[in-house]
Amino acid sequence: MKNRLLSLLFSLGFAFTCSGLPAFASKDAKTDAPERKPKLILNAAEATPEYSYDKWDKKVMPVKAGLLVDAPSGQGGFGANNLKIDVDGVKEIEAIFYTGRENAMQTVSISLIDLFGSEIGWTVRIDQIAPVQAVIFRLKLSEGKLTLKSKRTSFDFTDIKGYQIKGDWNEQPAQFTVVGIRARF
Figure 1 (cartoon, one colour):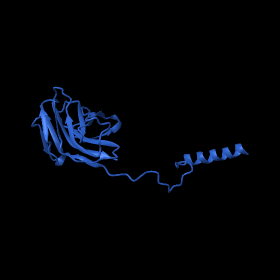
Figure 2 (spheres, helix red, strand yellow):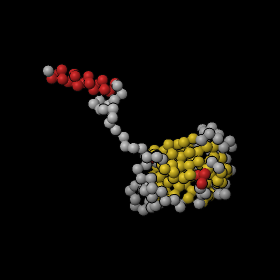
Figure 3 (cartoon, helix red, strand yellow):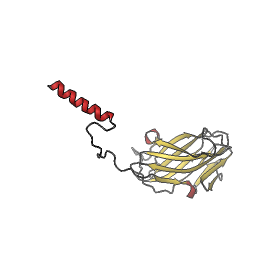
Figure 4 (cartoon, helix red, strand yellow):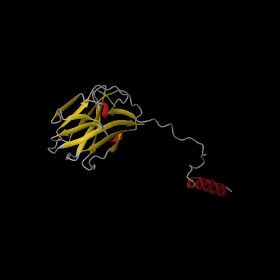
């Protein structure tokens, strides 16, 4: 009798699993919390960097689609420290770029900076993007390089104060546009 009962339970579980439903779950069961819309961290079409440096100094220009970097090399960067953004609960960061026809730079580093000066950053390859085709890079928090400041033990996503975009420091021309950076929940 015990074996028949186990066999029946196993069969029911298998039937529900094969039907695409979780075993013993109703069609009306809600398993996921409501999804939050992505939140802009940087809308590059409406932003002006607070600073640029090295060979990117005065080479970062606002254009209709975002912020264009048209520099003689990948030796430089730009950013801002005047943000006040709360993205607590973020699952991943999206960075949207496209390259120009003259780009020869291989990678770009993207960093977010919290109120305490701690930084989380990612490096993405842009040398394989087809020119003038926007690409969204989805950056997992677990893959970000964390640099903690002020005896902090974690990055504070409730108070992002800045961002920085940095080149790969090679001698090849840098020509790309940052369209935006947003948080996904």
